[in-house]
Amino acid sequence: MLLSLTIAVIPCFSQNPNIILIMTDDQGWGDVGFNGNTKVQTPHLDGLAKHGIILDRFYSASPVCSPTRASVLTGQNPFRLNIPHANTGHLAEEEITLPELLRSIGYQNGFFGKWHLGTLTTKRRDSNRGGKQDQSQHYSIPTMHGFDVFFCTEAKVPTYDPMLFPTQMEGGESKRYGWKSRAQSVAMQPYGTSYWNDGEVQATSNLTGDDSRIIMDRVLPFIESAATEGSPFFTAIWFHTPHLPVSADSSHRGLYTDLSEREQLYYGSITAMDEQVGRLWSRLEELGIADETMLWFCSDNGPENDTPGTAGRFRERKRSLYEGGVRVPAFVIYKNNFPGGIRMKFPAVTSDYLPTIVDILRIDHSSQPLLDGESILPLLLGKTKKREKAVGFLFEEKISWVKDRYKLISTDGGLTFELYDLVKDQAETKNIITRRPKKVIGMKSELDNWMASVAESQKLR
Image (cartoon, rainbow, N blue to C red; front, side, top):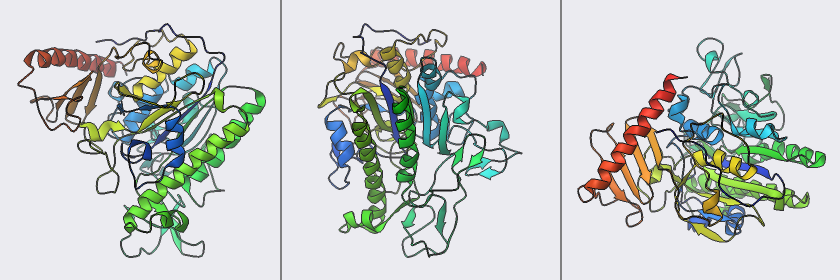
């Protein structure tokens, strides 16, 4: 089934808005206050969500990171792009991306944070990949895809002092899970991941302290420069938080002294990140451009196993296609253009970003007809109540097809299926596949057609 972009009848916005896409890493649906968590402190995210549209049923395109990130920039399911898993494949230069489309109409584009769509150097091994011999074919940096500047790592880093980890761990700490921040005088060793700028230039300064602050220190000058020039800007801010290993300083751990040390590290890192989102919005207000900025927020997948992260009432976690693995916290705020203070329950997915933004800006995208996402602008404006397209998911041997209120899912490569009514049964506890045989036949047929289309796309790459 070939999915194409449809331009909706929408109001003409007065000018091209600034666009910010914030994405966190492994933050569960329930790891924010605006989704009901009473432990974690996320006042800035909660405040923005309160004045924007909370997307209650927002999905990451995959239950792991790299594929979801590919969907954000292309509007396509990552399997079409041959990016089925983390640290697998790369974003090919010939793909049409959102920043390329925006640059064509005068946007300045900056990328900051965790890239995870290819290696950033051919000079040496870096993070999970990199190096001249075995991974140079996966060299793919943001400026190859429409970004003008970038400051990013290939993959994960500690959430505090991101280039380092302690030579000695204390009780309960581990290199995998995390550790309390250390004083500058304590012996540390390289973590093995670098921040990079264009031209394979390794960043060497301002790399200590909270990782989200380090990222935001690069974001704000980019925004200030664009504002000074009177240019609209697009920036992707992809925080590492709260991907393991989590680390936090005493002030942020101290907000959670009544909780366990593991919770102090996890929640402390999230609150530190939340402060940087507040810092960003405050700067937009100081520059007088907050009202003309559209900010989207989501996570890249559900919470990691064996962490305090929570998917709320939803089933399972990261790496699963049940709701807890792919339903993520999300909102959008665009003052004076989108309604505020509401929670919408229609299904949406990270692949919808590109077609929605293209719709708002009325950019011709006819040269790339294969989109798995659709514009959700009519839904955000209340002009319709149902999305047109189903949402397909593929991961390892797992398959899922979400259409309106129903979800068809297989965990064994399509040998057997389950069907859930996500309106009546959000926790996916009652398999109703024997009760709705006609629904199952129709959804299976649609799923088969979509998977055939994905396979054809793979052959072309």
